[in-house]
Length: 139
Ligand code: ZN
Image 1 (tube, protein in one colour):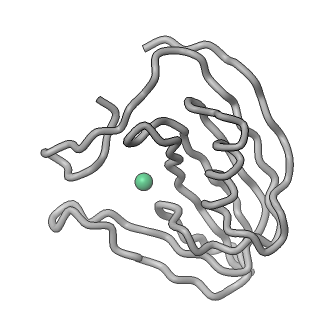
Image 2 (image 1 turned 120 degrees about the vertical axis):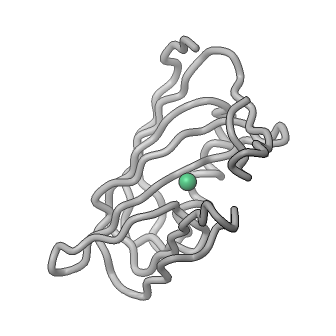
């Protein structure tokens, strides 16, 4: 489907706040119902998910209690049960440059995080349960 660019937001999230929660709260505060975003910065701990395709459950693949660089965090904003819902994936690097990656879960604490959010205009995208994958996907 075709979308158009709407408002853009750039800024920084608060030290020690939760990354996933900060993204959701900002989107709700600004009523961003459709969009894409990126974040770079650093965390003091992180929780990443991995979707097990066989069991169709998210498993916490990495629970990291260490200081890491957010080398990339990208995601999208759409609607799930008519609520603003963010979906983000993240790559984190340690002191030697080795990376961890996965689905961003609640429980990643910000050291510093700079975001860019691009709101999009178009038809609303609603996530609905998909029997084949067990995931809430765009209808
Ligand atoms: Zn994901």
